[in-house]
Image 1 (cartoon, rainbow, N blue to C red):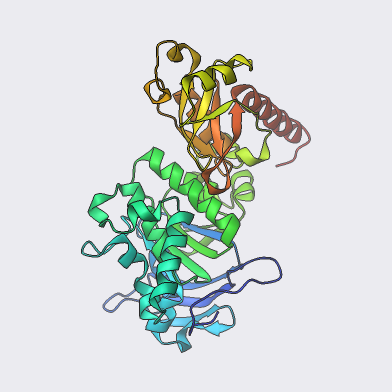
Image 2 (image 1 turned 180 degrees about the horizontal axis):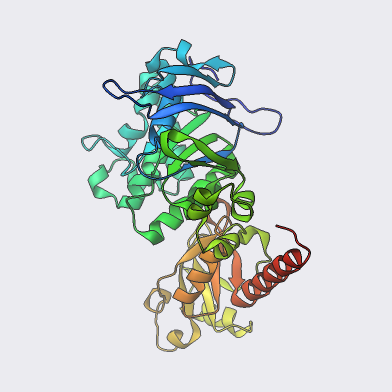
Length: 396
């Protein structure tokens, strides 16, 4: 980690993140006779998402905040890359670590551009470099710079504000990103979209992300590894989602996993792991006649409508074209999933739409194809057959 420039470098594995080591870390608040965090040791690999999950009051946020010294450890050692975090000035350390919180935490009197450019400004980046970085990040999180950069936070939806919060955390290209229940204040549909967006960004950026949540389902979806914490942040189990679901370490962890473990197993498999089907697409500037011709030459009675960057924006069914004079008169709103979405997400999207498939986006939110109900049924059937075969052989 380079605290002076606060920018990350790529290692031989393609990670721009760095390893984090917590070695015997404790936190005792003044006036308390028991530690909030008691002698915790943890090794967080570079370039992975590690999720802290546990009950309210267990110290998971305190443990995360000690990494950037928003909460000072009482004892122990924290290494970020090769650097001892306690040997770095707190202000320098925090400028080299991205931080994203619930409800975004944006400054209401600043524009979106000013909010994202805050840390680069503190690091004395020149104006052009800062402006270019803001535009790059807005585009990366799916917000058109010309449309959003000069707005104020109050002019954005909750989901858009969270995207800006993530962009601001990434502004100086830090190797480490800390996320404290960042999606907890938005509705479930927006939350799922933001989770997908984070996973998409991570495939490109490969940061080291420490993510705090109380939602075990969110931990399963996002985490490369999950740290299940008990009181005083005692590490009850630290493992991959697959291993925790299959082999909870004790009854407390099993309680977190819950009776829906088999369904959560489906949440481990992503749309990118199944075969997508091609489906007719048109562009929103196409004429009604052009769209009719596309559908006439296919076996389908509906098409995906794309914008000029090949991003799905709506859909149109053949029956609605009969009396339309412009394509916009016949289109209907469209919900999409991404290649990072889980099979559970895809199933929910299919049930919400009026056709037996869900439209899928990939890099840059561009159209990739559709995932069909038949594909999901075949995949789920195979997963269940594999699980039954493993159980019959006495495997966990």
